[in-house]
Amino acid sequence: MSLKKSPWLLHYDGSSCNGCDIEVLACLTPLYDAERFGVINTGNPRHADLLLLTGSINHQNEEVVRNLYAQMPEPKVVLAVGICATSGGVFADCYNVKGGADKVLPVDVYVPGCAARPEAIIDGIVRALGVLEQKRAAAEAKK
Amino acid sequence: MKTTIVPLGPQHPVLPEPLSFDLVLDNERVIDAVPSIGFIHRGLELLAPKRDFEEYVMIAERVCGICSFMHGMGYSSAVESVLALPVPRRARQLRVILAELSRVHSHLLWLGLAADAFGFENLFMQTWRLREEVLDMFEETTGGRVIFNIVKVGGMRKDIEDATLSRISSRLTAMKPQLKEITDIFLNDYTVKHRLSGLAVLPEAEARELGVVGPMLRASGVVSDQRLGNPMYEGLRWEAAVEKDGDCHARCRVRVKEIFQSIDIIAQAAGAMAADGIAAKIASAPNGEAFYRAEQPRGEAIYYVRGNGTRMLERFRLRTPTFANVPAVVKLLKGTELADVPTIILTIDPCISCMER
Image 1 (cartoon, rainbow over the protein chains, first blue to last red):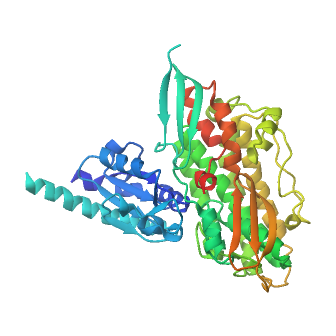
Image 2 (cartoon, rainbow over the protein chains, first blue to last red; image 1 turned 90 degrees about the horizontal axis):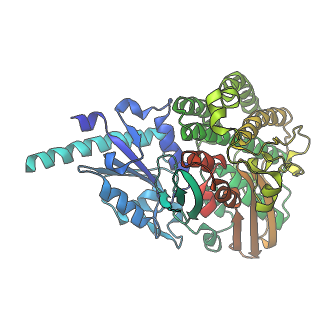
Image 3 (tube, chains in turn yellow, blue; image 1 turned 180 degrees about the vertical axis):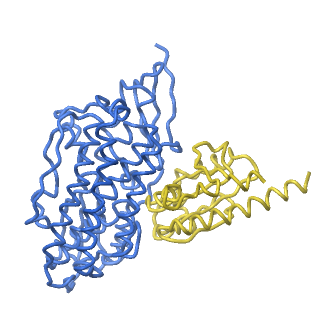
């Protein structure tokens, strides 16, 4: 239950234009205040339950993203925020862009938008909490 | 001497964006800093030959989500000078207003991140609370919070009514006391001064030698601002914000000054709007080349376009302010304490997605 009440969030900027990143940060500041759902932005993947990716995957950050995901404890949920993290967006044709976050990670929740609006991001986080709870229950049932 | 290498980034709590430094340390002292870049590189300059030059404004805006408007404007202005388009005065005034509004939002964003970097989280939250009011103004006039799509080659896509402009200007003026309350903390608070004063000093000669730009250069006592002499700013009364000390606190002071200055510029521009339409008609495709220099919140950005008479540009090149300022950071980091490293990196107002494009 505690997982659902206070999920910790790790944000990594793939190759985003910053638009979605500052909206993610704006979610945590007074007007939107995602902290009222218990969300805390952590810098340490080992503390995180949610991995929030903005921007697309490119040749250099692919390894970093895999690494961050591997370091997170189970159960964990991945959110792809913004159209770049979903499919590559306007940059899909660029030579260094491989595509959306699902090229390397199993994505659970997609948040659309360019840039994704804070309301949409918060909605995505709340949905991710549901997925997190399902994953936890499934792990529990296996025991 | 035994040294340790500490990697900072690409994922680090204080950096919202991936920038990576390998710090060579002797105990707590930084001896060398080796940057590695490319984590955000997309290669969007090479999209220019694949897209229609009018469509490419959308891509140019997405170079960076913080100065998105200015990137769109810089690209459009460069293409306009190849085409020799007469951009209506009203469109240029609207550009000035949105550009200065972008500067207010960007500097508030930086002040917040800087406060977060030196561990003053409350100040970060309060600064971003004020920033939201500026974003409301963007949303009201352009429809977007960070990416606007309002600028186009030849002028503006959408007009903003005079009444809305003067309302924005009076709302900004009404914000001044609140802004002053917060910026006074940055200027006078003992803790803030203690963290920033005398830290990472960049003397004028070195600043020139390293080719730094923007608030970083002005904080070292150099009067350099691309808005000076730009015909868009003709008839507006303002002067470049300059400080002498060249340390982190001076850079902070320059940005605080510029927030208030931008509000004054907006008030002047909004009070004297022309009524000669918002866009010039494009009759041909760009043939030839042109440079355009714009003063972004982070400093001078240079746009280069070359067309060959078709709808696709042959080349688009962009040099961004962070790219010019990173060599200075590498230099400033040497000899400082490890605990000051995040503050010094943030002091240039790094925008990595601009830098790597």
